[in-house]
Image (cartoon, rainbow over all chains, first blue to last red; front, side, top):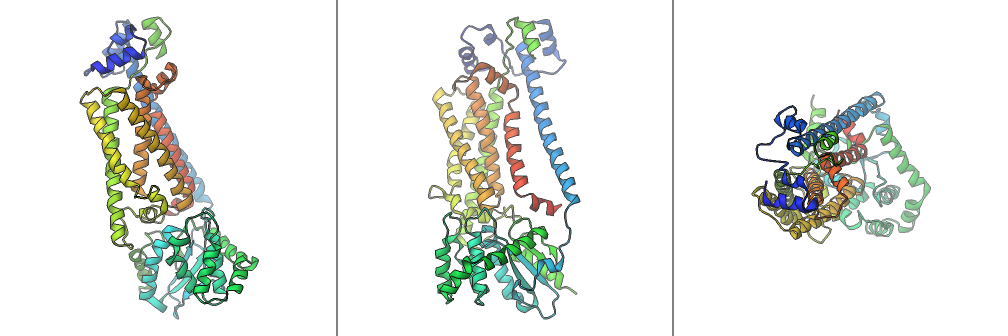
Length: 269
Length: 209
């Protein structure tokens, strides 16, 4: 026991407390239940503080371990309950609706990649880089479908999805899709509505501004975006970005390499 | 426990358990080193991202655990520079304090109060980052989570130590009760954070099973 602790303890306990003279902790005083320390305590010979501390520690340890055990049990319970009501494979018509936006269409229809995305989500922006590389490489050998899945925690995710859908109504979905991701740093992640910024993008893309603004704020476009979200929820889309390759949920890292591996596997004879 | 105390002293006040120097020194040293290591790795990844925006950091494992996008957000440089730089400067001080305690150096009260101030600021900051990561950015960063854990544990033990030595005003019974369950408090705290993470990304985790 250092002088420091002893002195501080004396201060803490009001100066002349006899307890301060006892060393609750010595180099060799690892308290063992039932050991000499405990015997000391029972006999009241002065090892009590040491023993108390020993008991205190083990109570602490028991409580800590117990808490972790309860937590793990709760997690296991939640997982078991969850497994009962979960669709395993999403139905194909749920993932690709007739009006879903296809960035490319494979003539042979062998591989279909569906991405549920949120234009304001940073991981989607990160995945976008890999997706564009993949699309450039595979072109029309794969069908690439984009579904809206704006998340409510992003202040402008719905504005952005509405902007993309309004552009789609003028035949420029892909251009707006690229524009939104390329400029995400400029409009994403800030609370006030960025609708005006998005309108400026529409003008840059040569869209009819009046029609774009009316569509983006219109109920029809909002309903179209909501329908995608509903499909995503039904398909069990957990977060964004979520990819489905031929209907199967893609669980790897959403990088160029990860997606390429999944596509190659699906393309393999 | 209290029965044993009464038997011994007959005062009705059981002797309080103590947070030993080896425990607090060890916690500060290990916590400080882990935090410093995480801050270092985050800084390295941030620099790699600056060199190549398409760089996929080693800590990007899946859509939820992806530190790249998290590092690239505005929240990752609240004060105008990369957050990990703060940890890179401060965690080694905590580790050194731990080493000093282990070496039985007697540190003055002001030192402990400074450490207390630092851990309180760290705690507030880390919880703000936790909120941003979960509910604004929507992704987690593995190294950042190491920092969250380190800060919560460092705060809990520094506070308890300062209560024990009356560096902080606290009623004796409260201090005694907390000392008896010293690791339960930070554990419960961290489990609560883990539960929030589990709930927030539940649908994603469940697809992995």
